[in-house]
View 1 (cartoon, rainbow, N blue to C red):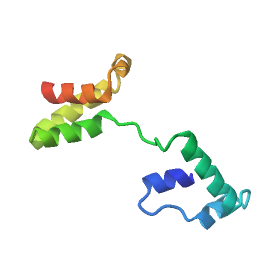
View 2: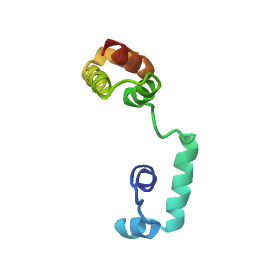
View 3: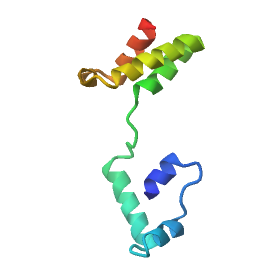
Length: 101
């Protein structure tokens, strides 16, 4: 939870608050050691690039209109419900959606 709150929240949890929420099951030092281990194991790779992030970049580079961007976004969302689309890289899905839009 500590890593996630740092990554997602604009105001992350305080370490003392997290220890309190766990009813003092873990000490602050144990939380910090575990956080360090988690980040080392994941090699700090906490985010997988999504087609939406690629679409944002591609749309900016191509000066796409808002209408075109939203249509491409819709096409990307349609791809989320198709299992067959999992074999394609996120960048290819985004570029294809922008091209089709």
